[in-house]
Image 1 (cartoon, one colour):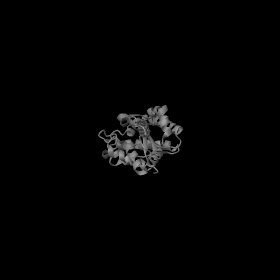
Image 2: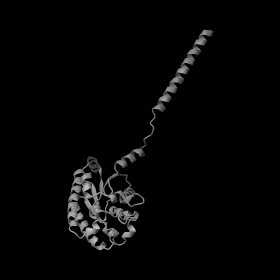
Image 3: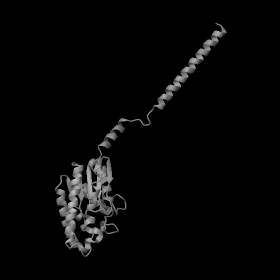
Length: 258
């Protein structure tokens, strides 16, 4: 065999070797370049399916819905969500639309907003607190609770409440709605006993409106605060403290079907 032939065979061999190495490098590079960032296991798929089966909660109302006075920042809504997660083992999506100081006429306007309606359509549970600011009016209610003004105020409030419930049912016929009643933060004042009569009557009429609608449950709280009201009030002597909100949350939780 001549030297030229050996040289030619060697060159060809080297060429094919280089070609093989280039091909191997391209194949390996293509494999790692196309590798997904996260490998989806069966467990991940199950978790996603479980999340889709979780609960959606929409909370409406005033400062009680916001949790004003609770040092933890949760309020009864947050405590209730924790309770639901623990007992049902389901994920919970919460939309809290509460506004501090809100009255029933303001909630009536808010609930007609398009985005609020969209949130209600998705809800499995709707929580509502309203009426305290209508009745108490930043303490003015203590001054004129024996006058005929209270009757006129309540009449307007009940009309607003009925409209609010109609809007909830217009957007969502299936969700369970829990409407939290009023307690008396002034029970230990001089007018406390008389104010209690007004609040009990107010709660009774509110419960009657609630009963006109399917799956709307009135949740009483008056009895929870009656005996030891100061133990469950924030420093403003009006809003519940952490213990008070927990009492309300536990009352609502007792009405849920787990």
